Length: 90
Image 1 (tube, helix red, strand yellow):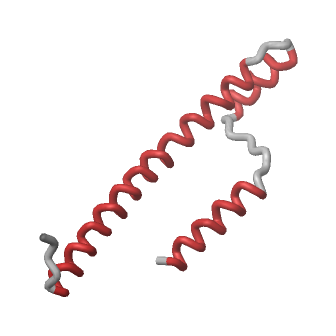
Image 2 (cartoon, rainbow, N blue to C red; image 1 turned 180 degrees about the horizontal axis):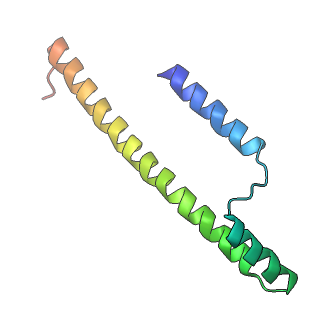
């Protein structure tokens, strides 16, 4: 478990430190944004924020599921230890 946690932390740190600007838009969206930005409109920033919002939501859901899964497995593991040791709580 410690090895998995260490790898996850290292991956997260590497992801945050080596961040690069990426073009996360289709060709038509990119053309629209470039033309609107040359005219002075701020559509590009809003479009990029929307893309980041849509990309972050699945990770938050999966993180919540993983958290509850971990808590539930920890409860089952502790219950099994108590059952094996015979030390039942009063």
